[in-house]
Amino acid sequence: MRGRSDGARWGVVLEAPDARALAGFYAELLGWPITEEGQGWTVLAAPGGVASLAFQTESQFVAPVWPTAPGAQQMMMHLDLEVDDLSAAVEHAVELGATVAEFQPQEHVRVLLDPVGHPFCLYLGH
Image (cartoon, rainbow, N blue to C red; front, side, top):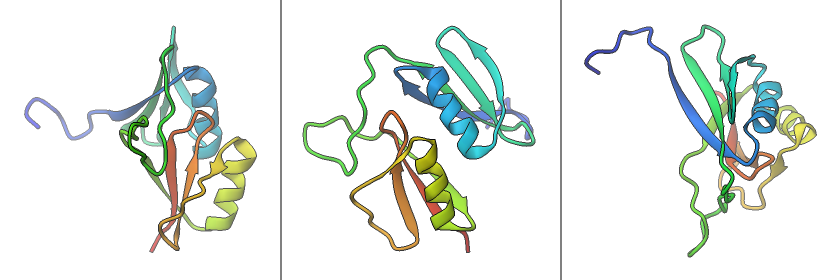
């Protein structure tokens, strides 16, 4: 991209009814520190500081439906997180407040829903 250096930060923003609460879930899940906070937003930074995951409070938040259903709030994006031990990673996510989605489309991937309903995937690395 023009006007952007190789080391420039990039990130993904998820909306939630309470940005700080959802950031706390992902901070524990990923082991990333909270690096910035403001009124209605919180940011986690990956080790190395280039990638970030941010959360924005949205008072009109509607949880997406997984799998998609006609007329329901559609998933806009989801996170894919590589793990070494799928069972242990799923157990950890559930302990933190995630739920295992009913529909599981792949053998080596588990779809979970974070505490506010955003789908995310845990998958075995190759």
